[in-house]
Structures are given as C-alpha cells and as structure tokens.
Length: 213
Image 1 (cartoon, rainbow, N blue to C red):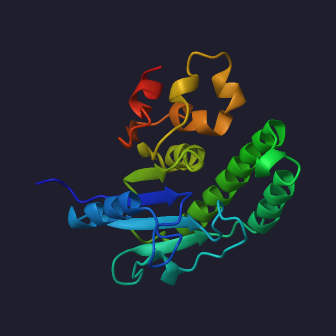
Image 2: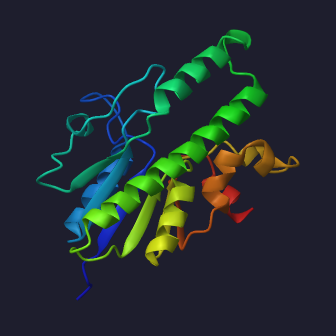
C-alpha cells in the first residue's frame, strides 16, 4: 500500500480570501484531496491578504477550514504587508487610470516576493523546531509563484522533494519578446525556480506552453 505522507503546504494565497463568498476552490480541493488520500497536511499562510486593496488580516476562521479537526494552519507574520499594500496604493495614484507604472510595479512585486520568501522560511523553521518530536515532512508543496522560492528553499533545508503549483499566467503571449524573465521576474519565478514537479492548472492561459518554453 502507498505510504501516507506528511505534506507541508506553503500558499501565498488565502484559501478563501472572501469568507463565505469566493476564493480558491482549486487550492482548497487540493488540500482536501490530500486528506482523502490519507496524508497529513500542514498549511502555512501569510497572516495578511497580500493582494487585497486594503490591509486584511487572515484568521483561521476566515479560511472556511476547521484547522483543529482537519489539518493544522500556521501563519507567517508578514508584518511588512500593510506597509507594502499602502505603497502599492500610493504607486497606483501615480499611474494612469489606476495602473501602477511599470517600474514601480516591478519593484513592488519583486520586493513582495523577497519578503514573503523570508517570512515563509522563518515560519517553516519555527514549525520545524516546535515539531521536533513529530515525523519529518515528506514533501513541500508551494502554491502560486510568490510561494515558489520559499517552497524550493524549505525543501532543500528539509531534504525532501518540492512541488510548485501555478494557477494561471499572463506570460504566454509574451514568450517571443526579449528578456521576459527579467521584465516579469515574479511571474517567471514560478517556472524557473527548481521543482521536482511543476503543476500548471489548465485555466486557458496556456501555462503548459510557457513551461515548455
């Protein structure tokens, strides 16, 4: 029989960012599918919704998951998130029609990715210290390109395989242009960060073609 695994999920996306109304069902169903497969699931989320227009803290109750009965949910502090969201809003006022100027968007996205990576690594290492008596993790599973670097680094620290799962891309129409990875480093990171398995959700944005390129 297949051995049950202990899987550490790192997600840059809240499972249900709009509590009770909408969210990431494909993310939730992945977690629930692993549970149905008999695996132990531990989830690390940012303590703030990084992609909201205003600072919104993410609490265990807002994920529509009973953390205590189904799986464990831990939060990466991300104390920098409110300042980053305020910076993004200020930059939006400098652009036309509410669009952030490209250079500022490039800097903000890259800085967000760096800070999130540091916060998730710290949260994972804190969890590792607290779990010394528990069985080690067998797999690290990162959701979204923002979590991909942390997933790779944590998997190397733990000495286990890593999975990166992407939920769509805008890069397909840009692949013939020069320096795409430099111009959109965070979007490209989901494909370029090393992983033992890359999963691209089939949402019509041709992630398979980007992955092959």
